[in-house]
Image (cartoon, rainbow, N blue to C red):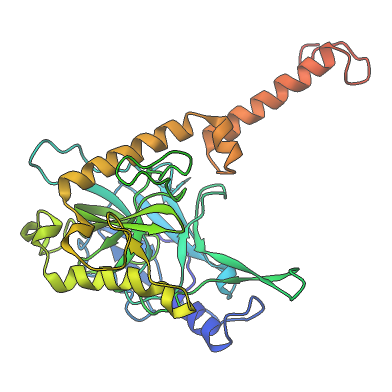
Length: 355
């Protein structure tokens, strides 16, 4: 399967060269180049430095017939990655299961990992919850004048520096922003749960593959729980060596912790704080092991199922979910029919569609 693409590297270089203004135009995209993704031929950002997807078979795809498509017109705000299965569009959030397989006691926990920000990149890319299909796009920020009026939107970049590992999310999870997290007692950040893949192969933005869960880091950000799950690509040569975060080299854990802690300082904010002590101090207690992380993931997966089962809540939070959009459309028809029956639509009492 071949899909057209715009090279992310060209977009980022163009934006950075001109201070990432919304009006900036990046260099024209290069010719399409196929990139092997575990046996699926896609067109990705294969000309961009540090975005190699590795050899074929480097990743185990989350879905058979999966492909992703990166498109854009040259500026970061235009950039978008969409997903498909067997040529049919799918949602990164709603159509890919959180768990690749059910794990019995003692077995590795394998999840499906959506790559958003490749290792070595600074663009703040994420699944957009409010847009149909939930594509991956740049997070954006309003630029305002002194009177507080919005002048334009700009894409967001991580001022602190490049991501030390590929950053992404686990689909069909939700950190509930309306209820306290059972571990921290603090409400969630209203997003799918985040994850870092510490594996050696670097996937492109939009790739979705199986990853082994090792542990989690409990970031508390703006009085919200924002778990960072630590995973390793299930096909990584070192995946069999690590069963839990305790098995990881100390420098790997410190690199993740330091990056997450110190990112805010680049824009003048204080360092991040972590559960359980709510300080920025690095200590073994900040890490949750595999079993505790499984309970965290189970909870966010259950929260997601409750969310999408409550269309009123989905609408209130302004999320895009096809099941609720269909229900909303049916409700609108029923309301229109009721208005006709009761004479609220100008006195015509004939049921719509029932001549």
